[in-house]
Image (tube, rainbow, N blue to C red; front, side, top):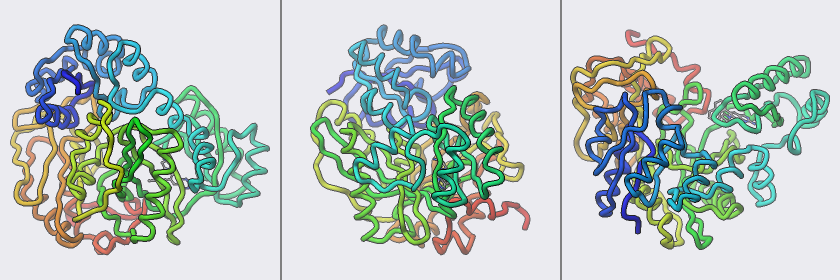
Length: 448
Ligand code: MV4
């Protein structure tokens, strides 16, 4: 087992990792930017190293500075958390060249899933269903037109280097294909420095249902059931839950098996997530794979009663996994509490938290790095807490979430708490009747 893990991250996930390390008897090193001097991850770690100024590119994204911090503290492993360098294959490679274990998959596994066309080709070979579309990269707009007419409009143009919604265009008819082609290519080049585009049938009103998987160094891959992440706004998830209200035992078996095939096809090592689009007929299609721990991992932890960070560390240290799948024993739901103003287009609301009282009680979990008197810096993402509730049924879970949202006090900054309070009362949400376009039709206004 590792003696000392350096956590190449900040905020709630850095704290989350430190907690598990302490329980496992592993020493921890925090790294921080000068904007995070007062952060709890700095205080709770055994050691802390300042790695640069506030801007991420000079601190949390700066590989040489993080490697220097590993060297001076003698860390034998790095946990990247999510975001920042978590899916950076070059970083994973540098770690291994320094003989430091990157807690996550190999550089090759990260690369194979980072390029979307490569990932899709790998899935086709593995027998995982994918959305019908072009056979790899499109040569030119003429090629795009031919394939689009074959599969039928509407279609979606996607950047092979994309993911998370960037460089995507819906095309409803042949007449608008050319303009969208140009826009998609420009956007992809500007965002990723790669203008490779492919095309797919556009799946209307899909659900986003993802499967948590885990694979060890001996080729065992299991699934840990699904999370429904259909409640999103501009590709930012707001609520995640398990079981999905749309799931059936038969669909879980089929999707779980496909998720395992996806993991096995690249010999996946670590915990990861296989994302699917699910249409109204319960057809499902591989969308992408995330080769990291995700923000919403506590939903799975609550329904299967296992510590996923501990699993990650044990797998990285070479332990075998049990070899059986895990199924939800209760219902869990997570609301992301962001320092944003839901009444003004979810505009970021950084600043000083004047008072803070987090929800408590049976079945209530709050993962956060903030406290009364803490100043939310404007440089990083705006998530300040995750409120996770668990209860025997979805109805009871929503009731508990309403109670927990009502007792959450955060003063000094605007938050998404009022948005969640309104969402929990929505009849369609309560009925489990929603898809990824739900938030566009759900009008948030406080005084209505
Ligand atoms: C799609 C799609 C419909 N049809 N692909 C959005 C993020 C990126 N990973 C892929 N995405 C989508 N791909 C086809 N062929 C609809 C989306 C999509 C979406 C997917 C999941 C969650 C929210 C979404 C919001 C808008 C569009």
